[in-house]
Length: 144
Image 1 (tube, helix red, strand yellow):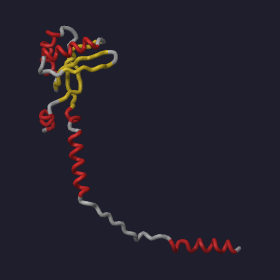
Image 2 (cartoon, helix red, strand yellow):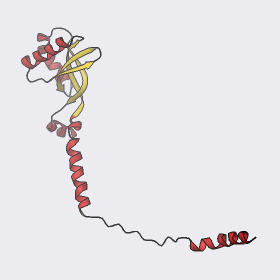
Image 3 (cartoon, rainbow, N blue to C red):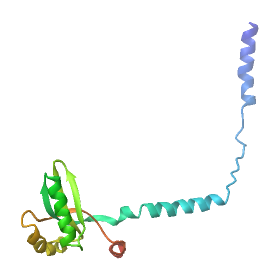
Image 4 (cartoon, rainbow, N blue to C red):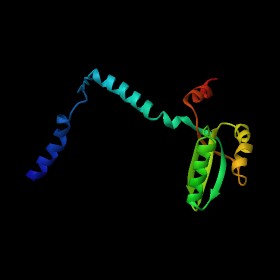
């Protein structure tokens, strides 16, 4: 009986000891945190700049072969014959693909096809690809 009375007394008196919401929390921020945030924004901007220079465009497919040595030879010929074009060697199993150029339009890519066909007479095509563009061109593309 005594334990029952103690239990009932505790049930009625426990709300008297509950915490109130009058507690105030103050946050003191160091001014250097803002400068660190600015610095991190600059770092993020610098490190992601390269990713923004890649856009949908066109390249000229020069060779599609299963022979790696043949693809490397074609790439070196492109370096010698067409120094203004950047060659890219891509492996998509089981083929090695040699592509050249970074063109925004298919017309630009079509303009170099005849000269490339003189060196590589078969299998020269214009293909859609992600291309690298000059940062100056990227800025002009974003202008209204």
